Image 1 (cartoon, rainbow, N blue to C red):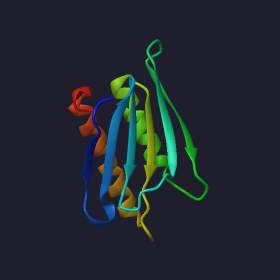
Image 2 (image 1 turned 90 degrees about the horizontal axis):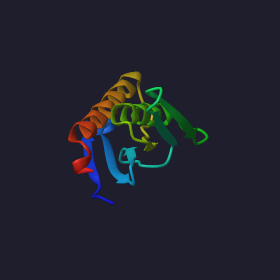
Image 3 (image 1 turned 135 degrees about the vertical axis):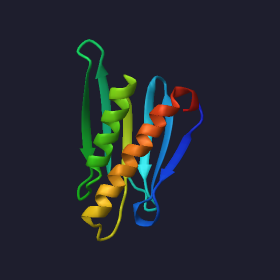
Image 4 (image 1 turned 90 degrees about the vertical axis):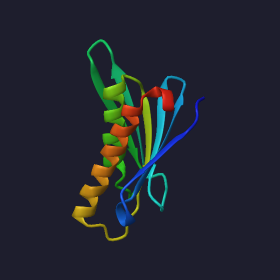
Length: 122
């Protein structure tokens, strides 16, 4: 296995960290903040024949991290053609709609940066 890549984006309540490493040909990614936990897990799978990407999500009771996990797994798998497993755990007390949007923007930006770095860094 190659080294872990760790990236972060944002400040304060909307700061998000992405940690990634290859496990065989698949990419395992954790997305979290300072209150890291396992809130949802998503598996992304690419079908080279149909060129389609599918995702399967498991969400812990009472958590809403499924949107983050699914978005990240879909983007990673669609763009790389490799399987991915994303574990997401971001907790912000009394989060606002604006903060949710900013966190999602940070997550997408981190995933795009990871993809742009390519497999040589992960």
